Image (tube, rainbow, N blue to C red; front, side, top):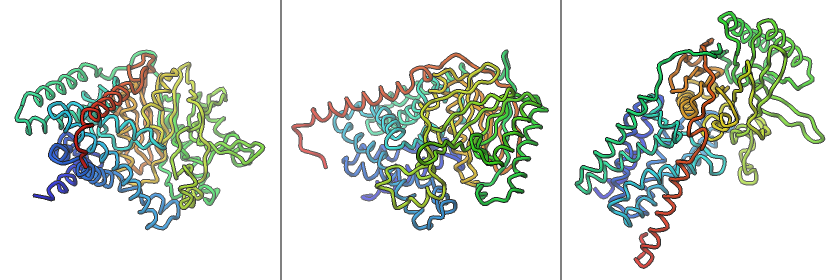
Length: 509
């Protein structure tokens, strides 16, 4: 079929998308790339690029279907313009799939017998580039689809999530190679290797046991709708929401929790602001921590006054029973949500960020302390960046927290995908991770990626558990994205060698 490659590309994109929440057909990720890899083996680089881009377009289109709703509903943007932003985004992200296909097609022409071994290194290289280029958007890395495969994902403690993606691509590429070359051995050797990784991961997982020192912590989910705009909500409604969080916190304290975590922007708070209502909230929180002896971590919107315009920071603030305060300012902000990147280019959508507000980024990985133990508190969107989170551990964090407001996305796939990503940060760093989300999904995740406690969406809940601080650092926590740099080096070297090898041959278009 002359147009069979179109169907193959679409099949790859849709099956890969179905491997992620809410569809959760995670097994599909092991076979989803096979149609695309067959196309790459049989077509020229230009057609391979188009097939890869089309596959990526359908993948991201399905994965990120929830994006148009947010700027339209909360940014007061016309839905047509919101849809255009969505199409531009998925079209841009799909380029990385297209570029992978183009380079892999070139390598296949140069190294027909060994190119399948280069495919996973090339794929990891593009996932890493996607994580860092421009503002970075590593949402939908293939490895995340295996979040429930606990033995396999333990390899993330060595390589980060990228190592899981590597194994997925290696398996598919070896299968295609074995079919085309009629050699079964490479595929079975890869299967054996993947099985060994599973067995190794199984030996890494420890039974749930609480050793000393153990800390009792709780996560509060107040179920505050993002439809509430703090500037316009009545004082009675603000008081009701504030009291709801205090009531849930008292309940957590009665259960023995000494660290209590509120979500991002669960109530309107600014500890540094002089307004009377903020001072009243601050005094009531200070009374609470003094009465209960608990430490409270919560999301606030801090303001600093200077010679120029005031600056606002999305803040994770830690208030101790001795009234000590530590603050972490969010560093990696949400583009078009908390700030406008490249304003000269994107001035036409300034309306969105004016509706939500301009936020100033923080500059350092500040740690909080609780009962003598340091912990990090990446905020919301930051949890999707593996290197950003591991730097908290590198600086001495013995456990991790993350506060978020996923209420923007309602009951779509986004909160489930976001929670899935957080599981990997726990495994990569071998740290307990406590996640507080305004409307869910909140949870307490152990160092092996198991959800010790997990809430449902759109519910009010208190999750509590004993957690164990850890000081040992994983290979990934110590060395970071070493596997990615190895992949980049090998991929770049292979491409350069391929170009030199083929310099006297006719160009392939």
